[in-house]
Length: 492
Ligand SMILES: [Zn+2]
Image (cartoon, rainbow, N blue to C red; front, top):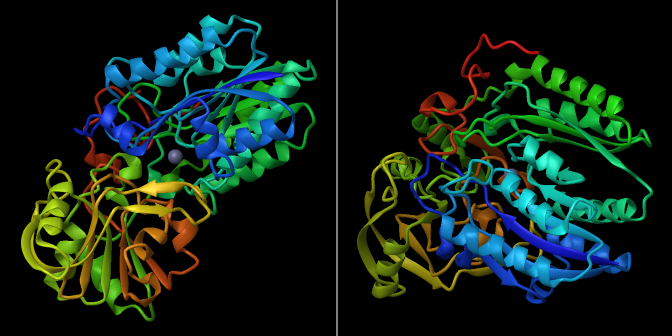
């Protein structure tokens, strides 16, 4: 049994002016061949789950390329072409294959393509022919297209946000692919895309409208005729026609059942559409509330400046307010500012520096902020994820500095990465439990590891490209009408 294995993952925020080029992939993940197995084996990722299941079920993997970059603007034609050509060349060279396993995102936009995954899956299909089955794992934020559904026998979306089931989905996709190869199941799929563009803020699956949908899906999956159900909340910061929530149901050779269940889930999502609308506190109000709260640590969630949603990661508005009111015992995790890091490194640990931090990427995350502080630590930015998301996966933040401005400690990083793990605070010598306030630049993911240690969480409505206030964005190419931008939208 021989399975092809590859990964290409990017969530593209089309409002970002940061191009996702080769350097962005090299800074994060760009691996080839056998190196992929060594890097991902045993990690809480889709690839980790795929490798584990293949080895357990006796399938041999042909690893090709694994590429991922932090969410930002469109993927350049250069790096997309490189990864795609490498994948197709390896497929041609692999000889007879029994199946193909792909770990993709579902919301990748390249410089020339709205639907990156649709293009890639169709290209893989063209090489392997119509009889070799393809199974794909996709992120919960995928914006699904008919091309993806037609091109692959099986799509498996993450069922959680924070994404804590990636390894499980990788295992499931592998096991189901082997059943297809053995002729035990015949996947038959239905896709529904109601005119619904949920902001990120209320997409979490521990409560709210997505929890209701996945509770229903869980019941549906008990039917032996149902292979799997995925409800993609979608990625709203992609100004493309297929952006939005989608429902994908795949059954064992029963189209009527797939259609019926997909319709039912789409209707439930629609009925409860108002629950997706998200509200958070203005910056000054949120900071005052956090400082007045009992106990520690209190988390200020800077939801709109989440690099994991394609925001710059260098937003300054929450920091500006903390300094304005003279807050103490605070950590800002993290601000992406390689230039400020270089200045800190040049000055050295213990030195006092005056410099501008953040606000440098664009005009949508607050202006640069001039501060004077002491460089407390410098590090190479290497840590290992220990929280429920991506546990065991090495992380790289590049050269990292802690700049202490009157007990407001700013963690300055050189590579963009969402603050989803308390380890990103601990590895520079700060104890998150000892701080009064932790400013965390993340929308939902931080909750998996930070909720258990937080005394209270305050969600902030600061400016930024992952804001849940969709009225802030100038959409031009999404489907209209669409809820909530067009409140009178009807469905079906
Ligand atoms: Zn996601």
